[in-house]
Length: 384
Image (cartoon, rainbow, N blue to C red; front, side, top):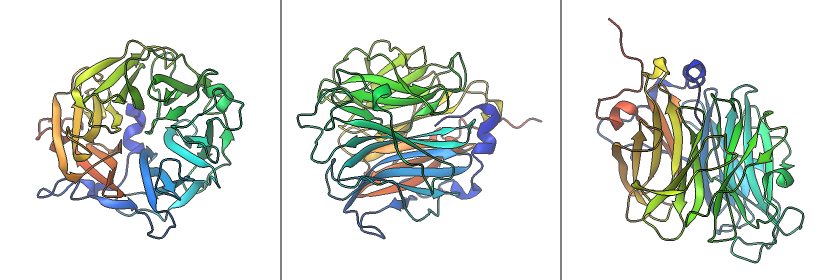
């Protein structure tokens, strides 16, 4: 998701041809990454997640064997070096007659592992059904993790439910969005998976985390209910804390947000953010740079993407310079269909967005200069 100053330039060194054309919006410039029934047998592909893994873009989604949330979904992945040409889709985790939901990607910069966290719904179990609580019932929802070095081949999924789910919880959901790796503060190196936990329509926020590169996992405390949170996204704060932004699940038109100052172990109060619209849809979130990232212009920047108010249409990008407290920068990504999205840094000055559009999942880019009308480039200032 986000990266240190000393690694971001090298890690984000993908092709230089990604800036959008001057006469087209980013949405109009987008390319298709996942399309149902095109070289695959899935009638539906949904729920995008994307990271930059050392210069390779890793895109994940749910390949649905039936056009429904629990449709015997597999987790599918495609990769790209330039954001224009994408690899043939591979199945990272095959569910059989079960369902795999909510792909959450993290790039571990120390091990160079790509981490994929997701949930298993056993055959016949639905999110809105009578899901058993806890970690041991064979009909409850389980958390799994697997790893890859290149996004093309993946380790066997490992069940980590007992360490990443509270005993009194029935439903658990990662993201759906990338997680992050903390790069500063007392929990530097920690892998963070944002979670919301049920019961349905009585959600709380939490985080699963690992301090040993995914070998072992833990679950932090649940948040207060906060009134209608679910579908969460995270970004690291300037001090090594966590900002979490959530969809409002109870019909509210603005998103919820909260902070953790201890690496996801506990959460502060959940508040409503008046500057982040929520038309019944998930959002994208990523850290682009820190204030000490001189190679990226020495500014703190967090990027948000989502549909504008009024439905799953008309994507918008926003930027915060103060860890998500305010969002003074905003620009339309383009007209037309725009639903779930995920966002990641691509290269200095360039941000990538993977988003749902008219039944497909597309990828596009925009520059920080475009987003700010030239007031900020997202790169180092030229020195005379």
